[in-house]
Image (cartoon, rainbow, N blue to C red):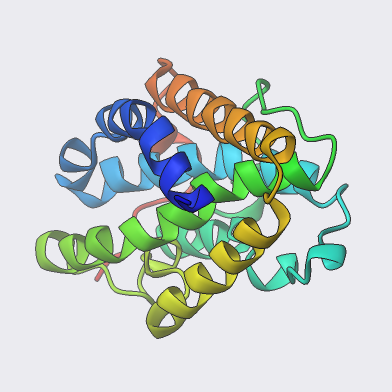
Length: 205
């Protein structure tokens, strides 16, 4: 029988493509300011989304969420790129988040977030080539787990397949993944004030 991860990949293919278009990495790699705007936008949804995920007991699924948290990496990148912690309190945050009422919802949300870590490896190389941004100079988020990214993904998939072994749970996970893609797409596509002009100054390199 086809694994749940393959079902999710097929079910979310269109949503994934729309999200990539909304993210528009090419347009956000033109200079460091446009890149910082993108990172600020990601922080605006990752911070509240991860706070919501922490309300679910993922320990029962043998998931160490603290080891997978990415909002801190975004803070690290924003500080390297010239924002202070005070500046970040003025950044907009997403108000529409996926419904997270239990482990199935959490796994659906994490399908999007953990999958993004895989794609981030390609973006990380692009950033280094175009903007000379590395893991330690503003690219911590996209470099994510570094050489451990494959192991992290396989560990997540193993949990996903084991927990989503019933049609009802699998459907719940799929619904949460689709809602998460929709939330990300709406957030990244929505017009906002230029975060590149929020506080701070561009660091000199």
